[in-house]
Length: 454
Image 1 (tube, rainbow, N blue to C red):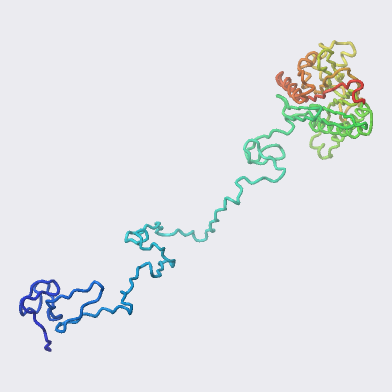
Image 2: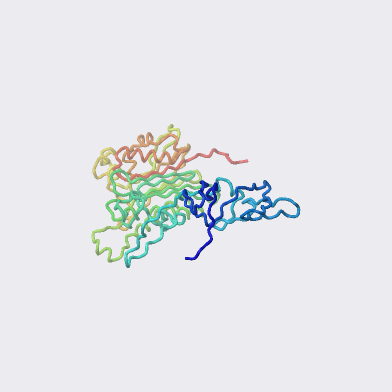
């Protein structure tokens, strides 16, 4: 073993490691085991470090040399101190630290950082399964898309479409027909039609309109038709007749045709329209050999140039009701019916005839199987203001006598024609509503003599 010089501790010295007293000749500290041969024992003289950071000159006899502190610069000023904020520092994310990086709120602590939990594993779709569609953006998807134009939606479920037979394809609910209840109002005429309480459909129809005569004065028109229930497709017959008659009047009156002649021609046009419905394909007649020709009745009124014109075929009626009720209420039409024939022949009085079960058997109608078409027209010139009530038997069955009709018509009918028609339809429904009911109200105003002359 090679010999290495080892300095022993002197008496009275202390261990450089734990400052415990050492005995003379100790090679190791008895307290902490410090190797006394590795570092010479320090001097008893302990130099003091100057406050300015410099150290006093080392003693020549010192057994160890302290490192010399750096000299100050030539200006004899101490070396400037640097603070952490004076140096450019970058966060781990790449951004610069805030100027208050030394503040407590910017100090990173050793507390655990809370992070959102992650699932242990991620589910994978089954082999061969189609990929799941991404959810649609609710901002671009309509929750209730608008159906195509002309599509009818069920009034019950509000989602199913209505098939041509009138039933919902979704819930099967039967849809109300458009003609079950109809209302229309113009400036000087109004009409209301209702299916009633017993019939499964409305076989009545109406048309109201206004036109200008050649002199610029107005002409007001109302046409009311009642389909014959014992005929085939009576609802189509009444609709075709009302439209054809109205179009004929709107064509004739502006050309200067007399209103009574225009009404006569309009009834003939309506008859042609109903007759055309009987021309069914041969195949259709073979499948329904017991069908007969469509048929309906018609009653209409025109107010133009101070005249009141009515025309009719069948048992639908027109009444004149004066505003002040001082004059008599008048029925302006005569029924084409069995009861009317009995009364005209003097065989029965009116009460007996209309009490008979055959009373409503009509003797005149519009249709291909009518015996002979005889349009009835009449012209009147009232001397006072009033209203014309044009209606089907669905109303006059519950107000047959003129006195009953006068009581049923509201006194303000001239200024509220639609309300008056609604009241009269309600009167029929309150009476039982056994038939379809249609009412049109035309106010008649008397122009004073000399009015408008300068």
